[in-house]
Image (cartoon, rainbow over all chains, first blue to last red; front, top):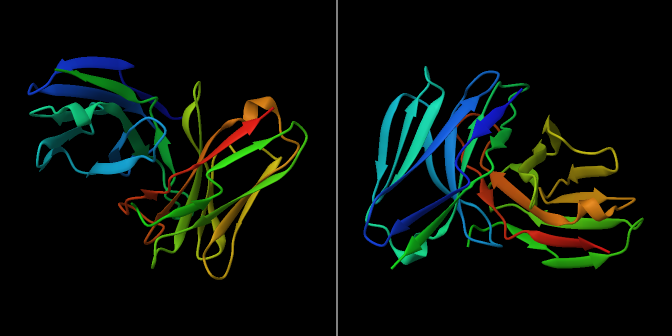
Length: 113
Length: 114
């Protein structure tokens, strides 16, 4: 089966840094995605990790350790517009070349002034 | 704007009814995915199509069915609706079906079953 855990909610101050952790247990592993979702809107792609290490993209970075089944998303220089839910998603075992993603419950980040 | 379009934006219907949700993928994308997002379940993968063929199946109920047409748009049919089917239904598309292709999500259809 697939199990993805992330904290439900986090609060941080504008200008600060927040780290959102994600742990997963899946049958097979073929990549981990992070999406941002504002309330009532579509998820938007932030990052993709398939190999161990850090991927940096502007204010956002994502880290992966496959041996530990662990990833984090780092948000730097927080802005009020970063208040949103952040979804960790894993592509597990490949079956018939499908691209099924299993999502965690999401972490709601609230940025305060 | 991701380039994925979904209609309608909102749908209110009664229990026992049947509805059809429509999705047009981004230009050039061959793969379409359907997800259900409810408050207590998070984002749940339902089904994936690639170039008209079913590629992967998730927790899709037997009352639900989908298809992808030759012009690559997709429809999700929900029948014998129950109160618990009330949710946001997202369609996503990607260039190909395989590893690493990011999925672009449409704005969603909010279904309310009364």
